[in-house]
Image 1 (cartoon, rainbow over the protein chains, first blue to last red):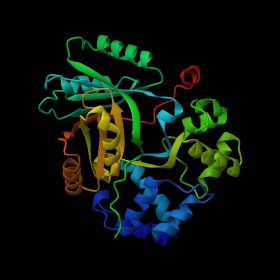
Image 2 (spheres, rainbow over the protein chains, first blue to last red; image 1 turned 90 degrees about the vertical axis):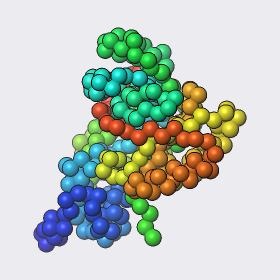
Image 3 (cartoon, helix red, strand yellow; image 1 turned 45 degrees about the vertical axis):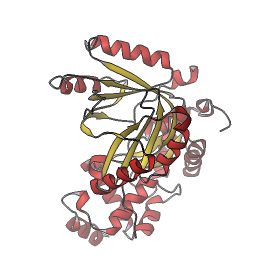
Length: 178
Length: 163
């Protein structure tokens, strides 16, 4: 047991992306797919990856700690639960204001995602934020309140509500194994 | 899907389970037993609840969400397609490897999707192929900076019930 943990520590790469260890790539793929719902799920992951149970747990903890894993648990499907009013609000902010407004909107509890993106020809919007709500009227009111609170009345923006999800699932970044 | 209002099928314990375990799970030999103990259940009952939440479609999986900036490459893309082609184009997009979100939104750019790949080279390849297949220019919107991404937010149970 102790030996396994020590050797893991020695093998630990500087960056998770540099990990060439096929077993770790396999572990990542397993974690993206989800745990088997059995009493000892980490044991199953150990069998599937070739790692020891201790290594599996150590690596998950390490990846969580480093931020490589952002969260580890129940991945909720909001639309299915009834959070169907999903608004993407896009703003055309002057370059010297986008950072400040982005940070302020991100701090609002109803804003679930907020990021800056590149502008394109015919698409001048450089700030995106997402609001997940139950009812559309409520989300519209929240957007009006955000505009007021942050003095965004003169900022060109558009609200894109979603009508249907053709797909909604977790990212699959792991390369397929040959 | 028996009912559109799945929230009515979730009792207090289901909701606590969701509220409590979106971010992290006990890294012990028997994590479901540890979770069960906290919620006053036994291990088997907890596993059955998790399975049921998955079967209901409320929980997609019990697993890890990786930081996409470290885990690989991804990009938000939009296309503007005529309404009569929307459904067909959405299916072509879904068939493209690495597509994990694909939404119809109310805008001239009506399909919005995220393409992921192990690295930027393969992302580029996937997008180039898709653009050729769709014969429609892609509006590619790479991220410059993330201020906030957190989809493990607290769920508005009361509002969900009223809706």
